[in-house]
Each structure stands twice: as structure tokens, then as C-alpha cells.
Amino acid sequence: MPGAIYDKIYQKLRQRIEGGEYEYQSLIPSEHTLVEEFDCSRNTVRRAIRQLAEEGFVQSIHGKGVRIIYQPYEQAEFMLSGIESLKEAVARNKKQYETKVVCFAELIADERISRRTTFPVGAEIYYLQRVRYIDGQALIIDHNYFLKEIVKDLTPEIAEASVYEYMEQVLGENIVTTKRKMTVERINEIDSKYLELGDYNCLAVVSSITYNAKGIMFEYTQSRHRPDCFVFYDQAQRVKL
Image (cartoon, rainbow, N blue to C red; front, side, top):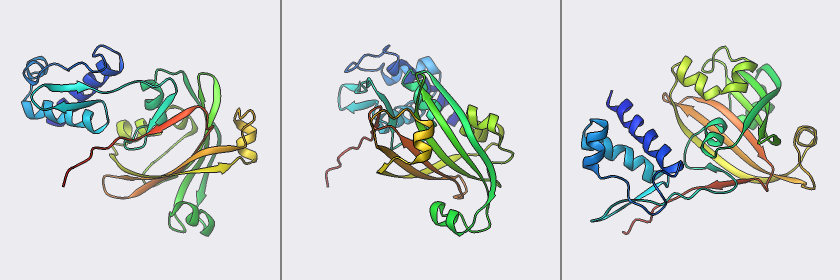
């Protein structure tokens, strides 16, 4: 129950920040005010604020309060430090979004797939190609590999909605850790076939592996982005030694 309350507060404050109700450089309401509004403990409020700070929305100012440091970008932005689905990221950026599954297969990992994904040889997997449309333009293609024993009974219809929502809300899985690598690569035939590339001959490529709460790797994804339309960001805090 405390976790649910903390998440409710976090989501509500984040919505107010992203929606402009709390303006850039303003202070959010005091802990006391939030405790009364949400009828919870100070520790629960602090946990929600700590997550907002870790994600770059706010910064605590000693003796003054918690200041909004979030600024929206004109381009769609994706967080490298967090784990959010593309559907969640696009909603956060207030963009129109659509996914089309152009390939859906059930495979047994061979040596080639194992080298590419690190799934063990013999693992049963789903392989998908999903084209992502942002504001009507085909700008991303994802190559997804999902472990069948974790992502049970996956279908193209589920994949076009949200795999993560399905995992969390239907299967009861907790998605915990993602490791990512970013590269720039030349376009290939599949990119040219499905994406609106214009004069671009290369893409920004984000390769990721993701684990559940038991430490089991259930996903390998290569997400290929047209380079002019997306911003990948992280934020960090310097700690004095």
C-alpha cells in the first residue's frame, strides 16, 4: 500500500510539472501541504520527490524547498536513465503515436541469435519488427526479442498496444533493470523499406537488454531512430568527496 501511495503522488506531481501547472523555476508545495493533500506520511512524500529529482524534474534547495528544473523539448525526448515504453515517452511528450507490427515470429535461439542477443542457444523467443509512427511519420523501427517463458502468450495485437503494460498489468511482472548502448549505423534494406528517411543514410541505434525482478533477462531490443527527430538525455548529480 505505501508503494501505491508513493507512486500516486509521484505520478500526480509529474503530471502537474509536465502540464505546466508548476512552472519552471517555481517551488512545488511544501511537504506539509502535500502530506495533507495526499493524506500520507512525510517519508512517502519524500520518496516521490526523490524519484522526481532522480529523473531531472526537480532539485531540492537547502532552506528554500524543491524547485522545478524540468524544461520540455520541442523534439520528442527519451530518458536513458529510466525505463519507460515508447508509448509512455510519447504520451509524456504530447505527441500522436501509433505502432504497426510488420513481423511476428516464434523462434528457437540459434548461435547467431545468441551472439546478437545473449539469450542462450535453445531459448524459445518471440521476434518482432515494430514500426513506430510519431505524429504520422514512420521514424523508428524496433527489432524486439522477448523470452517466451516470461512474456507469455504474446500476440501482435498486444505488441501494437504495449508489451510493458501487458507484462505489468496482465502477467504481474516487475520490469526492473535495463542496460543500453548507443551507436550510429548505416541504414539497411529494412530501414529503407519502412522508415521515412529522406536524405539520411544513417540512424541512431539504441540496443538494450532488460531484466525482471528475479534478474532474468527477458528482452533484447534494437531500436533504430531517424537521427534528426529525437533527443536522448540523462541527468546526474555531482557528489563532493
